[in-house]
Amino acid sequence: MIYWNLFLSFLISNLLGYGGGPAIIPLIQNDVVNHYHWMSLSEFSNVLAIANALPGPIATKMGGFIGYQLGGIPGAIVALAATILPSALAVIILLKFVNLFKDSPRVKLMTKSVQPIIFVLLAVMAYQFFFSAFEKSGAIHLVLLAFLSYLTLSKFKVHPSFVIIGALFYGGLFLS
Image 1 (tube, helix red, strand yellow):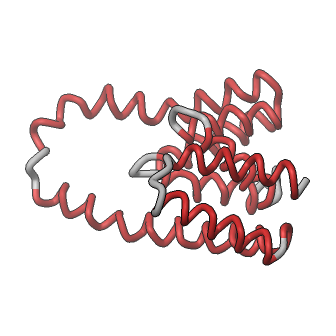
Image 2 (cartoon, helix red, strand yellow; image 1 turned 90 degrees about the horizontal axis):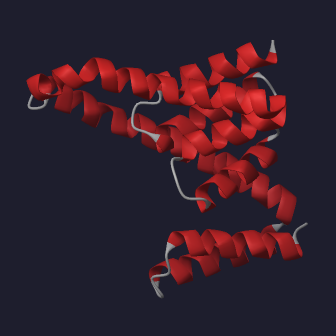
């Protein structure tokens, strides 16, 4: 039953997640944390941080990791297949229609209309992660990490992946 639930969870999240990784993450979080209770919000945020630090599409990394955690190698294969299947089918089916509708005002309006929804989903997720981090690590660590991240990103123009890796090391040294 776990494999079926994994497949449905990742398939539906990736079918509805129009816009790629940022749109899919809150949908995966809702299923994994709130609906099936496979992970806590803190565990999910750790998976998200690790997935962000690694190269490649975030949804596939999260699907593989969560699937492996729940069902071993078969679970990882099921979750990865469910993650990749909607995009693969969409590319195969819709490729013929791309040139036909690429200048359509309705398609452009639909794309613009989805952007605020994605923003709200990401804002809610960030809000939940903020308070989860505040409860787990305390105000001093949270403010210090936020300030150092902002400083290194804006003033020193360090690549975000290095900031994420630095935060992972900080958390491993001081918060574990």
